[in-house]
Image (cartoon, rainbow, N blue to C red; front, side):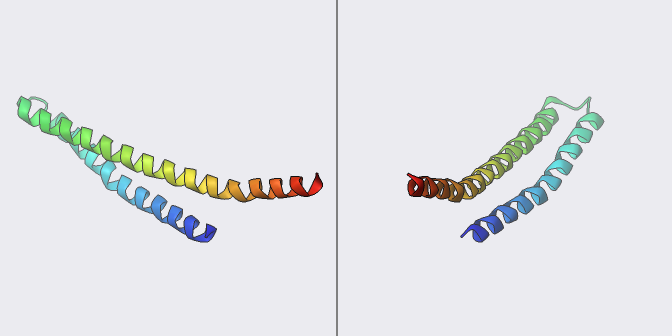
Length: 93
């Protein structure tokens, strides 16, 4: 069971990493487009700001997924040692 969760966590980390690369590229392109079109009308600026907001939102989702996976992994690795400690304590008393 631990191996399966570890594999899931590793897969999630790889997916998050692979998604952050294009998100970063989109963010950079939006930034450069904003510089290039600095004198553009308000509508164009709103679109560029929307791109920045959506990239930030996607990044927050990826960060949350990574954080939750790490919490699951930590709970999984901590549980056996806690159970073992209780078992040893129960046997000693």
